[in-house]
Each structure stands twice: as structure tokens, then as C-alpha cells.
Length: 219
Image (tube, rainbow, N blue to C red; front, side, top):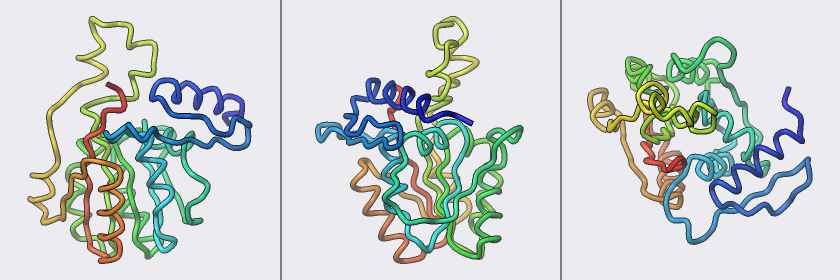
């Protein structure tokens, strides 16, 4: 269990790194705002915004690595009270899309999945499950071009091995994968356009939607 003090220290470091403003510095409440000058999408601001706009009729499934840490540290307490699930322990990043589809089936309600790009690449065959899901599953895919979480760890200083074995950069997007399985695909270029797409698609109750968000949280 991570203490509130530890969470606050981590949150402050994120604020310094990504130029967020800490509005409430108490251990019980972390409130952040993103600079109006910050036009690009980043993993943390997007994750927070998602927690504010998910409909109360949905569930939320959170991917490992950056997504779960972003929601834990920066998620809003202002959103709807919804069922939330995630895989932890030895499960790693494998099978997260399949897990989200199973979670949706068990809840018998739509689910939004917040997932990273490497996690999605490790579960490409489950895009078929998205297409066949009886309930809509919307994939919010944070594409930061590799293993972004490792940039927070001491190994980042091992410059001779970091890029090849930890960051593992790639240039892939998921448009072609979505096309293969007949899924709706969107690539918003700002958080505001993401919000618009997310709300519209949820109102339309489309099955198998996906947003591939090019983020630069670690640049």
C-alpha cells in the first residue's frame, strides 16, 4: 500500500516534469491543471480528463505501466462513480484488451479501456474480441512510441542499453489493425478533440471504437 505522503511526493515530481500547477497541496487531495499554452496531448493530462468524462453507465478498465499510475496519482474525483478493474501482480502487460472485453461482458455494460501502445502490441489478436464484443468497448490507446514508464527509473541513465532494451521505440500506429477487424478508429490531436470524439461515440454507442493518441509525455 502506497502512503498518501508518497503519492504526494510522486505527484509533485510529475508536476515539475510536465509543468502542471499544484492547486491543493494537502495529502488528501491532489488537484492539477494543465497550462492553457500546453497544446499537445500527454499521458497524464489525458488520463485525468478521461476519469472526468466517462459516463456513469460505463465501466473503466485500466492498463498496467503508465495508465494505472497516471489514474492513481492524477485521476479526478469529480467523475461518475463507476466499476473499475485492472490486472496487477504477475499478469504484466499481456492480455489487457482480452481482460477488458471479459470485464465488459461480466458487467454487461460498455467499458472504456485505457492502455499503452506496447500493451496493445502484446495483445493484437484480441482486437478480434473488440469486434465481436456484445457490449461496446472503447480503447483509449496512449501511443508514446515505446516503453515510456522506464524513463522514470534509474535505468534511463544507462544510455548504452536504454533505447534498445527498455524504451524500445517504434513507429507503429494502430489504424491498419483497426481496419483489419472493421473497428472505428480515431486519432485526436488535442485533449479537447479527444473529449468531443469520446462523447460523440459514446452517445452513438458504437461497438469497437478506438482512439490512438500520439502522446509526448516523455519527450
